Length: 102
Image (cartoon, rainbow, N blue to C red; front, top):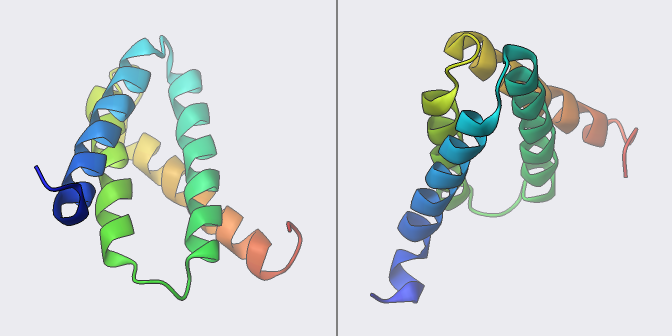
């Protein structure tokens, strides 16, 4: 395995597993939605900081966590979980653009 060539795939797989484990550990819908919102805030900040970089590898890596998390989100609606995550991303990115958060 060549880390220089396959780092995106490996990182995606690791985050997919982490997302799946975190979702399976959360025991109720409120906790599932809260973690999804927090992850959305983190991704929104990351997206803002990387606005000039190549985004394709990061989209793949982040989508690994999202797929793993939504696949393991048995406590709560998966569509609502995805919507809450996206809302967190949008809110965080907007707050950074407006310089409300440094």
